[in-house]
Length: 425
Ligand SMILES: Cc1ncc(COP(=O)(O)O)c(C=O)c1O
Image (tube, rainbow, N blue to C red):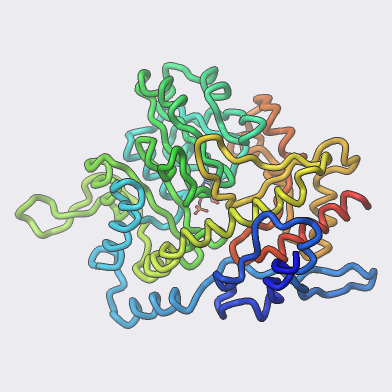
């Protein structure tokens, strides 16, 4: 005990390296016992008129001096268009290399990435695409953009993702693709899905917007489907300065088409003609070299960021594991969850709606909210009356707890304590 107390984590201000991230050597052990956890140090907070202390948690996203310098270098270079940018080409090689040597194509955002993936797979009017309803609307809207029909699938009670059981009954002769969202960072095992979908010629699109850094059987997610998509939105594990995305595929011809489609499908008309020609209807889904430089700089820290998210998740699990009023997220059997989000189910035993628990946490300065309060299929663009009972149940039972990489063990500790307090109120 004494040795652990001597390694206590400094307060959030003095313990950081100037970029909002704690220094590597200041990690406390993941599995601290209750008696040592008090040694982690104090956290700033503001007391309101009712005596409630609002915690002052570290912020997310985390932009470092290196990220800013990378953006500045591009600005000073004067090369600000994607087509002639070595920075874009270098990041695509790096990102594709991480994904098993596949081709990567950066785009404006994760929604655009899915739209282009659908178009590049020739999915359009008359085609059905199966998508989960328990997710962000950006996973489903591109199906409508492409003129295809979204068919909403329920999700598994444990993983909160689609499974063979939720997808198989929805397959019809019109089904052309299934979008598998690795929700919250949970790496869905794609093989069982592929074994029923591939023989029917149904394409798997992996939506990895929330799962960069997750692995399945030791391999990064995003390398199993025909094509996979990523988001570099502000809140994601890495960001391109607010917005950004990528598409990854091991099909060279598909990658070439994606490259064209993201810039109005405009390229030389023939091999010996330098004049540009729009080969098909394309889009302006370019990502700027400045944005690419930022996300490339952030990508170099991915391993560290995911390690911190996982450490924070494991610490919640350690502190809250005996709390019968909560169901905690699980690690997959054959994979590594990045825990981009830590989604906790509030059981009936709590005697209080999950939304009220989230509100009480917010009053304590803890960013917590229902996840996702409205299944996508019931929302106006889709207006689907299907009864997808698990997603509907999760919509009022699941809340998120902050787990982002700038949080130290002491922050997780205080949030976990607050969770128990608000359950007891
Ligand atoms: C699962 C999922 N799919 C798609 C998207 C769309 O990404 P973007 O916001 O970059 O367009 C998001 C973004 O949050 C997402 O979480």
